[in-house]
Image (cartoon, rainbow, N blue to C red; front, top):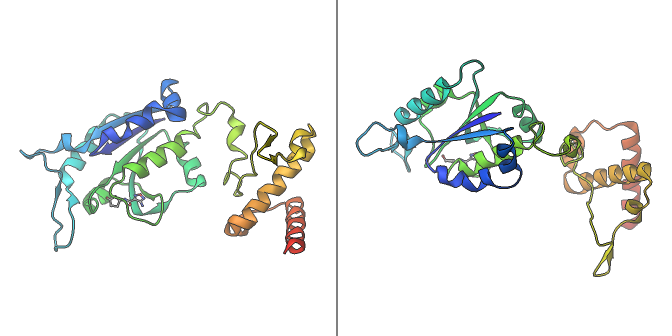
Length: 249
Ligand code: 4FV
């Protein structure tokens, strides 16, 4: 997958592109990320990229010319399949695992990082296929949201994570939160690991993990349970959990 990023601060992306999972995905050629500095496309003498909002009001708006020319340049490099153009914005569809999975199947993404008060509406009307938000709060720029999007989409690209099954049990992958995880040593400061995890009984381990995933979801994100399509077996486990909780109240 190719991801083109339009930003005023390309230097913010360096650590993401050179470390850990995303760094390795780029090194393996599974992911190509190109950064474009919007300011390089400004045609005015002072390389200004923003201006005051018509109608008055606080803050500055990213002007159309640099972004139009940057997008013409970036989109012109795509011969066959056009990429999906995304604007990171609080007005966007809130990012979740389903949307990340859907985007990981795209041939290419172009991500526009807004700044200041936002982007001239004509850029959105002319180029943007989808606005995406990472949550209901306001940041100073779209760079951090863009990095969040790159990370959660990039890791879902086939081959990026060693074991393709490793995303199956993750939180949200089936609409439930993940089960508790443990590693060595068995005992640490008096805290031990649930013995079932050392039993070697894979059926029992799977049952314990599913039950604890349901317990985690019930206790921390009951809203996800509303949406999850539980099997009769999972419903049975959920009842067991609720009974246990009633007895410990
Ligand atoms: C944002 C978010 C966000 C708003 C004005 C950038 C800032 C500035 N992006 N999810 N929440 N963006 O706050 O995606 O242009």
